[in-house]
Amino acid sequence: MVENEILDPFAQYYISGEPDKAQKAHAWKTAIGLQKVDNLRTSEYLLKTAKDNIEGRINIAEAKQLIDSYYKQDRVKGVQKRTEEADKVAARITEILGEESFVFSPAQYISIHQRLFTGVYSHAGKIRDYNITKKEWVLNGASVTHGGALELNAILDYDFRTEKEFSYKGLSMSEIVNHLAKFISQLWQIHIFGEGNTKTTAVFLIKYLRSLGFNVTNDLFADNSWYFRNALVRANYSNLQNGVHETPTFLEKFLRNLLMGEDNELKNRYLHIDWQAETAHSPSKQDIQQDIDGKNRILSLLDEAKCTVKTRNNIMSLYDIFGKERIFGRTEVVNTLTITPSPASVLLKKMLKLGIIENVRGLRKGKYRFVVREA
Image 1 (spheres, rainbow, N blue to C red):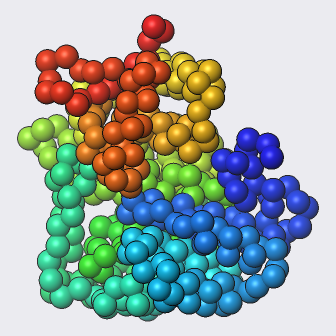
Image 2: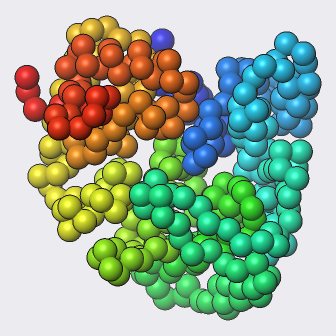
């Protein structure tokens, strides 16, 4: 099996020449990738079920039923509840993305949440009646100001009505992207549900873009779902005292890649408010080149050590998040990769041994950063 088929279990279907299989594969990959917005991972059983659906051995309704039945068996009672959530929601996202039906309305938005999370959350499809805050990694634990419970219905109706009355006629693609970024960031900012807002918003956006005539079949949501969430956060957060301003720039880059085929750099650490404060600019050509050089150095060390694909992917995921700028420890590795402390410690020791990371002097033991220079 070639490397891209190992890294992407659905790669064979994109080039099979069978449009139906390719479409299903893209839907499954997007559905699985969207679980990363909550640091969730799907199971091997979900992957097997997905392939059975793509191959035509079962339909999507049967795939959902198999997943539901799987988690009723005694032998999987010990499986983490979050893995069960990821599997069930991924199957439901795939089903919705495979349907052509769509109505631009608040009811459709709420219906998507209900379909995704029935049996997962008690509040599936219900607008919250309490105020919330959400600690955000990209904001160092601060929260976006979300809609107040008493105003949610009115705000939701206003946003949908305003968008429905808006005309895209005569706009350039850049203007269209800028407007879409504004609409979708405002919709997400309301946060009308207690949980599951980002996945609901992402699925709704994909369906809405298709209704506007865009062919949204690439893997951008699958590969950059956490960036998408962090971009929504940065589009709705300001802290003038610390020089942080809400900006749609990151979300616009995501949408320009999605709709215009551009190749903007989508790195989560560039969104972090500390990185912004330290550099006070968007990534320069020098930043990007240093990032490429650092990544190539790490890859060469991993190749030399003949590391497994899983280890390789985990390390590159950490580099994507922390890069050369940010200091991290075992807790951050656990939270980022959704693993237990023991495997995280083993991974850190391996990275130290290979010279991929180094201890940070002047801080307590157990704090590291990536080594991007040649040893």
